Length: 67
Image (cartoon, rainbow, N blue to C red; front, side, top):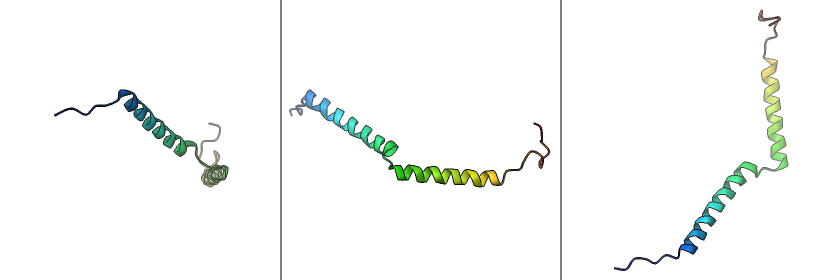
């Protein structure tokens, strides 16, 4: 009943490779958007903000003018 022999250098390199790939996957999710996707998201956010502002009451209408 001999234990499995492990080369520590290879094990460290394999662990580092796995960690590097995990970080790369996270970066792809975070930064991997095209310019068109970014501009579409920006346009949709601006459109939603305009819709929200259109429904907003002004200070004279809700009695809080001057605050």
